[in-house]
Length: 119
Image (cartoon, rainbow, N blue to C red; front, side, top):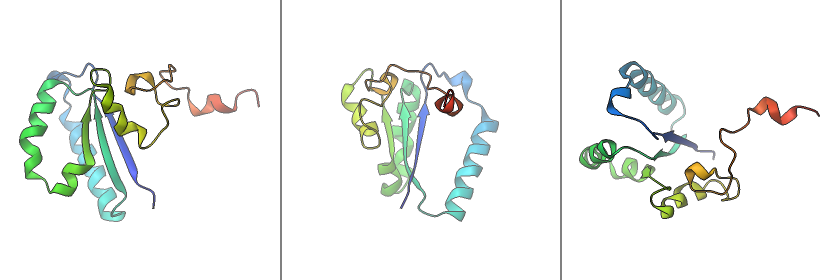
């Protein structure tokens, strides 16, 4: 069974950048996915979260069931190289971008249309 992996990169994200309209739409889309495709949502990795985000999660995570807590990971692979293990469950280190603790220097990734150019 295929599971969805959601990666949210919060590098250089500040509290002033929070967009409530986006959060409402994101929440509605996630609920619709769960309603129509139960079990599709696998894990969620939050990369390079700001300190306030980590603190908030540590406080509210106890309000969620253990199965939800286990599917959410807050990682900072540039500060703690061991955090790259979260990504290495899904992609080999050679293909993982340096930004996420891997060896691939290409960032941003090429658009899919670039893959077929010249063929």
